Each structure stands twice: as structure tokens, then as C-alpha cells.
Length: 187
Figure 1: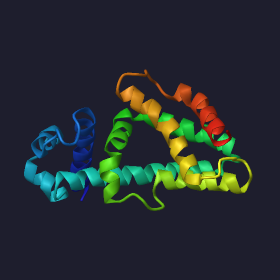
Figure 2 (figure 1 turned 60 degrees about the horizontal axis):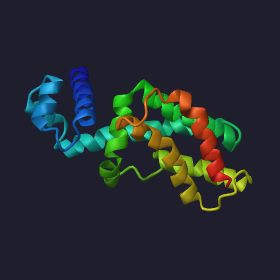
Figure 3 (figure 1 turned 90 degrees about the vertical axis):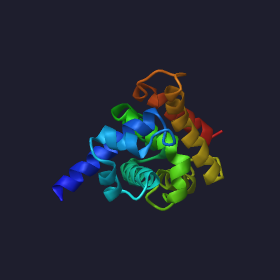
């Protein structure tokens, strides 16, 4: 079993690197197998298709990030939570830009295969906003719009970085972005 786990880790790392640098559509199963140092048949023993690999990589890492984001709910007050969320998101980007870029770039494709339940960062953020609305901390009344706006403020700097319109690291920008999120929720 250890060997299978080791092979799966090699597949994951190779896939993240290739998908993030080339794109999913531009990466073949042959490319993945070569980068992982395995035979194509070995890759198919772990995943029925490239799409299954993409979905597994995305959904497992998306759920893991939602769990990390859930820890921020222990912070008192939405203003402080926004600081913690921005620091968590930008710190995650700076610590593993390849994984962050993968999640960012394939989210629209991969979310169609799942990821719309409680183990979803969007659901966690929306719950924080709902709690803040109930406590009277937020003047914006539409929680879905509020969540979408905050997500835009959190993700657009990473997108700008991907396209060379912003330089990193992102973590030093977290307080500025958190303050913008707060102002957006309280126009």
C-alpha cells in the first residue's frame, strides 16, 4: 500500500506542475506519466481518466482548504476574521503557488464535478458573512453578493499575479485587501 501511496503522490505532484504551467487541456496522459516517472498504464490503475485525476486533485485540496478556512471562525468579529482569511489565502498562495494556481485556474471545470457542499471554501465564507449579518456587523444585506465580492477581492490579486500584472509575494497585501473587503461589506 505504501508503494501505491508513493506513486499517487508522484502523480499528484507531476499533475499539479504540468496543469499549472501548461493547462489541463494541453497536458496529455503521456506527459503526466513521463513527468511522474511511471508508465501510462500505472497512471490508469490510479485514475480512469485525466478528468478523474483533475477532479480528485481539485476536490481533495478544495475541501482541505475549506477545513483550514473553518479555523478562522474561531476569531471574534468579522473585521478580524477578514484579516485572518486574507492572511490565510495569501499565505497559502505564497507557500504553494503551484497548488494555488491549479485550484484557481481549474475551479470552473472541476466544481461541476462536486465541491458544492459544506466542504467548500465559498460555503465557509458565506457562513461567516451570515453570522456577521446576524450580529449587525455587516450592512450589505445580500449574503451571496457579499460573498462573491469578498471572493473577488481575495482571488483577483492571485489572478493578476498569474498573468504578470502584479508581483508577489501576496501575504504583505493581506491587510490592505482585508480592509477593502470590510469596506465592501459596509458601504
